[in-house]
Amino acid sequence: MRFIRNLLLLAVVAVVGFYLLESNEISPQETMQTISETVKEKEQLLKTKKVPEERPDIALEGDIFQWYGKSSGQLQEELGEPVRKDPSAYGYTWWVYTNEKDQYIQFGIMDGTIHTIYATGKGTNIKPVAIGESYEKVQKHFTFSEEVNYRNGLASFTFKLNANDRKTRPLVKISDSIFMQLYFDTFQQQLSSVRILDINTLLKHQPYEIQYRGELPKKPSLDDHQWAKIEAGMERQIFDITNIMRQQRDKEKLQWEKSVGEVAFLHSKDMAVNKYFSHSSQDGRGLKERLDEGKVAFVAAGENIAAQYPDAAAAMEGWLNSEGHREALLSEKYTHLGVGVYRLYYTQNFLAKPF
Image (cartoon, rainbow, N blue to C red; front, top):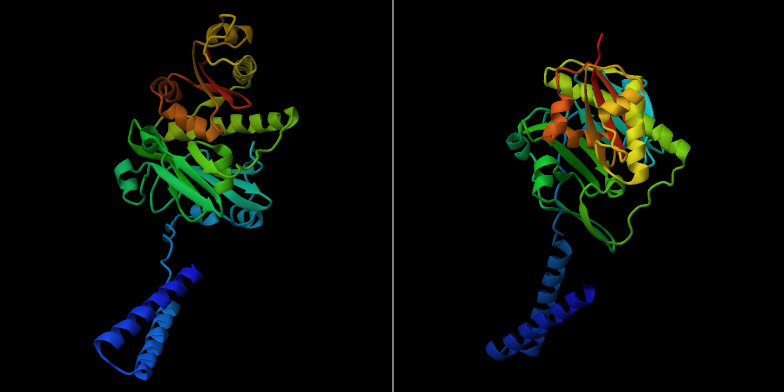
């Protein structure tokens, strides 16, 4: 760029000199003085010329957003001990805070720092928007684009959002390397939850189609023991978020049912190991047969299954926006819930018990 700039300056000097000599018939000494002054003016302009500023960061006022990048020590000092600390499949640990009614927050902590946040519940402060706010109102604060870009030196990444992505979970760039996913309840056209995450976490999750040049961050290599702890955490997260979603829609809380959770886990594992996805097992057994085999008593039962969502929160938002799954999720006839997660296969079994 400096070389090109110097060439431009020489061109300016030549044009000025030629014009002054030919048109104004002034002496060579006067010409050189004028050229010198012109060069000084041009150099001064180049020195004082401002480089265009990058797009300003989006200001997020809510209490939750202010926690991004802070330490686990600050979090504990302000909010106290979390309800649970659930390991994730991506290197961070979820610190879970909830009042089990209208506030639910997961802080993803790695190396003592908050790298991602998931929040839902109408009592959670996520200004300038709010859980339950309409899609139209939320869109006044943010631009929902078909493509969201990130560059770091020679590496470049483009997240490509289709029409359904922009309707259900648009992605917004908050600053150079910080992003926000906004999950919507498409049946009510309302904001359901939000997630703040840095570029490395977003690239590990890969929730959208992506075109890139460079290398993707590596996911942790996990053994069966580590996966078992991650799966148990996601089961409790699904249970908690289910009840938050139900109470937001004036439905009764469900009770945890361990026995049906074991049935759900076996179905998730069977689907993952045998590489299929269905409410019917490959041997023809349905939910009723699986519950009978597990000696689970019930008068009514329902099932939700999901696969390959990056985590429990994403699976929950997927169920909320699927008509049949939503019906089971929000049904008033069920009183108990068991959850089984194996790797990235998820099963919810809902029950109405006979007593």
